[in-house]
Image 1 (cartoon, rainbow, N blue to C red):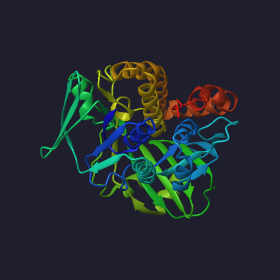
Image 2 (image 1 turned 90 degrees about the vertical axis):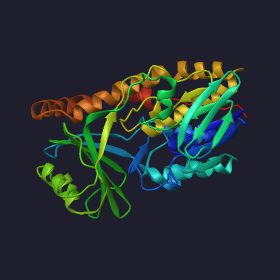
Image 3 (image 1 turned 90 degrees about the horizontal axis):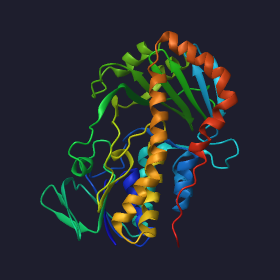
Amino acid sequence: MRAIVIGGGVGGATAALALRRIGADVTVYEAYEDPVGYVGAWISLAANGLRAVDALGVLDAVRRAGFEIERQRMWSAGGMLIADVARGRRNSDTLRSVSLMRGRLVAALREAAAGAGARIVTGARLNGVTEAETGVRATFEGGATDTADVLVAADGIWSTVRGVLDPAAPVPQYAGLYSVSGIAKLDGVDPGVFNMTFARNGAFLHLRAGAEVWWSAQVNSPVPPARDGAGRLDELAALYREEAGPAAIIAATVSLQPATPMHVVDRVKTWHSDRIVIIGDAAHPVGAGQGASMAIEDALALAAALQAEASIAGALRRYDAERRPRIAKVLGTAEDNRRAKKAGPVKRRMQAAMMRIFVPMFYEKATAWLYAYEPARLAQ
């Protein structure tokens, strides 16, 4: 089987590796010359995502690229501890959530895919896709073309292929939040802990990474920000001046990324045709700290379906049927998270009071379906 993968990020690199594991001839086309770069700041993989990379034999490489996080602490705007729970896992899980720079995760996955025999072509921007009964053809800016039996699009939230599958497919809309990430140098932040503050103007996330503190502010704003980042640190300092912890971290910042608007996409009805399929954010931008994990799960499930079914069309139908129920549930969780981050003062205080009561009692049971997921296994 000959496969084209569009996009060389987390989903695309994982898809290439998984497809090579089932013997496919794979070429990845990535629009940017350097898709690894310092893009997207830092991310986390929960236990479910780690099980999927373990099934593909790259768990050790991912661990080396980042560091484990044992606990998650949730804080009120006033600095009161709301809850202290296992981070991205059930208490009984032996796997620990891993945090790392997105670029390092992409690099580890691409290295594994290339080592398994996938070809990775950078600087190749997709221009169009045509499908026939016998295969699919991709064309790229500059006139280059390629043909394959199946095309897997992991081209992100602004996916070109999503519109090819369905010209009426939804497009991204600003979610009323934007994120700004940075690196600070200060003492007093416990290692191995992911901290989330439900602040007055949005959520503030931070953790210790060696001698640094990585942080991300998710700001509640009806208007998307300018992307140049000019003056952003002063603006953030003003927004978080009443939260002591976030304010101290912002004041100690030594590196800052430009603001990035956060987007949502209405439910995408069409994930595939007979020879084309979209995965990851192209099909379902989930957020909720699960974007990378869901893309990795998708890639493994797709490869397993292609290995199990006699036809590509049948495999894509199987993949769709298996993944949609889980993705629908994750999307619901993501929307709940966004609402919590956008809550007003009164609602925010009510949420904090309720969370102090219910999180210790019900959090693990409520999230077990997410973290206990066992990924597809590829036949050897």
